[in-house]
Image (cartoon, rainbow, N blue to C red; front, side, top):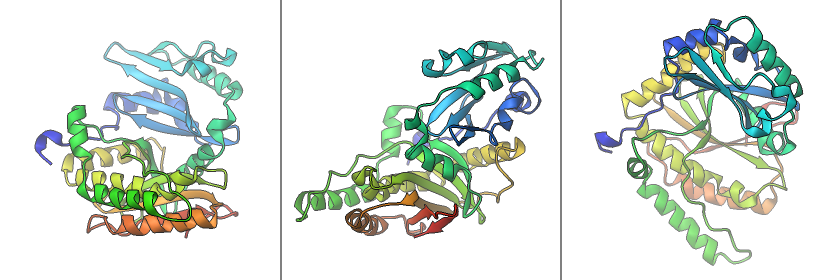
Amino acid sequence: MTKSTTPSYRRAPSEDFMCLLKQGPLSPLLHLGAQKIADRHHDVHLRTGDEVHVYCGLTRLVAAKRRGRDGKIEVSAHNTYASQPCAKGLFRVWSEEEDDGSFATALNRYLEKVCVASRHTEKEGEVQTTWSRVRSPWTALDREAVLSYENEQQAEEGRKFSEVERARSSLKTIAVERPGGRWMEPPLPGKELDQLAVDGEGNLVLIELKHAARDGNSAEIYYSPLQLLQYIHEWRRALGWSSVWQDLQKLIDARVELRLMPEVSQLTGGLRAAVCFGSDGRSKEVKRRYYEVLGIVNAHLPPSVRPIETWKFEDGGEPRAI
């Protein structure tokens, strides 16, 4: 990759925004992780441009963004939530000096009463929430992870890999020719990884989350290793640039300082990848197809990356490799 296509991952906050989060009017956002809506814990994440998001399952309930240098903070949400009566007084422009507790009051009133559709908190939403809170075999770091490029042309170049195309070609042949039940066509490359995590050895962990119950999308389940293969090659190449490595470490350090995650190992440059389910309700046929895809995908991994792992949650609430 040429220098012009060097990606970035600048989600760490500035020093000024860190202060607003630690001791300014936005500090109540840091204490939401222990609270629940619809039996799902809140999930708080930092974003590019001094912005913080609060999620419940798959949906974003609050976005708070520092607006330039005018001492203002814009708090917003989709109209689905901003139009609810409990949101009155919360979604507006706040002053950085406005630290009399009124933001906390408005935020708590909103989160106590906001209505969230079950489609955001069940199935995929439940899987997202479950894996966002694990501390072993790794600690969740970020969600909706997308490497940034200067423009679409550079992004397209940065996401092209012959190994991925060869794996997709092999699977496309199977989809067309395999007797005993036609497979769906393999999906096109993705841009947004479900989760990033860091393990005890300092490896960056790339995670694809899937609802693997019998009512899940079977093609999405058995092709999930192929989706992950695209991200593995892109992130493996990105970690070759010290700037991306530094971006990630700054984000980790900020999250630890803000107590959004516990102390973790420093990144070492190593890479792991895993497909993670909640419970595992796959049919025998979906399992068979999944492991056939997994075998093809593992044959096209970068030399330094170990085979893709598969994990589920036991009924007792503990993750287990399968």
